[in-house]
Image (cartoon, rainbow over all chains, first blue to last red):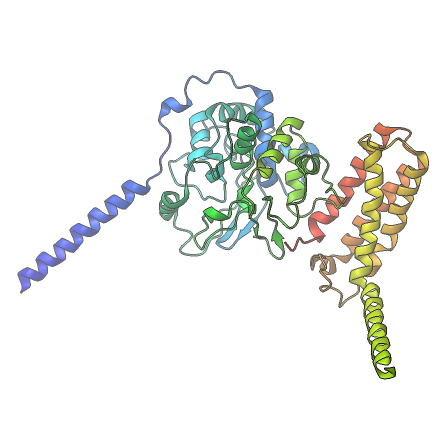
Length: 304
Length: 148
């Protein structure tokens, strides 16, 4: 009897160890091979700046209420409320100690596209690497170069304020296993260059889905509700549906959408509001062709 | 017959009264005021985009409408009008009434300033609209909630 129990127990322990090992293996942080970030050459700073505005970095990493040039100081300071707790976007200015001035391109790129921090840890998906995962290495290199030209800031953001169990970083590996993908969110006719570009901008750097797509209980996107609108994570109201089935913008033409992103005015001459105000300011800095590509992609989505 | 006509008349009167009450509600009044501002911005935008020819009278009238309308706009947020009639007003308005009023006043004074040095051509109207649009957005950023 005693022997049997011991055997059973050791069997269970073995199973637990193997299970934990398998879990670790399946969910460990997965940076790119070093080669992915090699041979990219000197960054194209003008493209880096465009990627910067398309990516909306300033919206979360600049101080709240910062205007004009102050929006280029990415020292953190904003609070992001969510159902999982409060996130504090860190200092990503080129400051060597408070910011990311000491990061290599590979470290920066792996954070952006694989959600892996400088010390090899999982990052929280409040940093939208689930979208940035679609960005190509050239854009990352150009963005890295551009961000090194921005002013340094000495602010140190507080750590994220998350209740148990969301404060367990290891569990993020399981989240990634479930949700992190660089596959297209929907099928559009990518033979059409405008649509392909729009898809890249919206699903990748623009990370539009992070607010406009509803999430399940674990914070992953509901895959069949892409851009169909979601509750406002910051409180009352809703983030609107932006598919052609939308009650608010379904009737807009592609040029109405492009014009809204440029000027902030709807076709009825209502104005942009809420957290979209920051986004629209960023979009206004892109070339007109980029806004037109975004509009064309949105019009090509399945209506929801 | 007489009774039927009477009932019909009463029903119509009732309908009319409901309509009057609804239009008088602060929620409905302020929505109408915003629509007026929107229509004026639309007239300016038509000129800025070159869809309509430049017309000094239209520019003047639109800017006056904006400045006059936003002067009274914040008076239509009494306690008790926080919700209802598809109001998109954020509860933050009542928490920060002074800031809300200051933002409305900023749009009014900017429109007034532009009116004093009336934009003389299409490009001038475009620049003016850029200034006013930022004022619209800065208030809607904090105080307007989208419901769908």
